[in-house]
Image: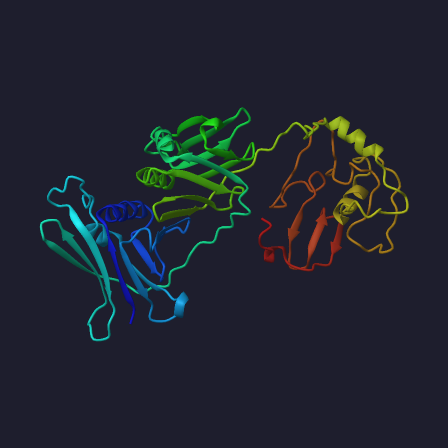
Length: 428
């Protein structure tokens, strides 16, 4: 049987309401992890792209705190999960009123009922009001295993810090329909926060109109700014807004840690025994300086042909750095014998030891890839699936029961088939 009892002041109860509102923008459920010296609220969104953890210190945040897990010894813990709306119905917005008017509370007492003689496990919250009125709420919870996201601060070399009140002013400029936030470190001593949404089209219909809002901030306005120049990091605008608005309620500074795009980004802040850490999935790219990168050279066809002709391979064979191209097919050799004048003469070729191979090497660099009857002025590609045209002009192939016949009906060079063309899938 677990023992969990703690008491909150009106100010602390109001902070619990604010953090639940923030976590409610990430998930419909909230997980609770209670240890002997700490109490943590966690939330994970449905796409598992954002994780939030709000830790409460047992000595600073609570008036009284007692947690004895049923197992695990000194390092044991009690974990459960509840619906966010159920907790928000208990921790309402007007729990703390400095004037002491009706509705304000004197203290909040929380107890976990986990006994074998009870029918159901309950999370019991008692609101003791100033007028002697006690409001009791009994919430049902579910036992779950709470997982935490790991983040290595030693790897996150890019860091910046700014007061939440100043960041809130910049966030208000972001459009309500924007989806993504690009945080960019410029070269002119400025950091750019650009919120945008991409245009989505369906045929001729535009489903979303593009909207971009960019806010440039001088790096001197940051409390600390150490970010690699030219680095783009992209996160969700909705998540960033929820975090900034909650950080502003604590009147504290917001700190960001990240390494590079596609790696997690962590936003953290806290005060008075409350520590918030949000780990977000990122995307983006790094635009490095292109000054040292040579521009690609664009060569004309004549220049490339001249360059390839000048780079002759050694006569002793390949050097190992170049893969030889495929040799000439047998169909081209038979067509060349039928039309000796259709191909300009080329340099003598070197015979391979295997004279029966389907491919032979050629020394001319360009002729290896040129189609039959190649012409510099016009290149054509013919395809004849019916084999009803003049075969002397357009050599064709047909799939027959005897094999593949290449050439004309009068001059046929039979080639033993290895597989029927109709059985080949994925090529046509």
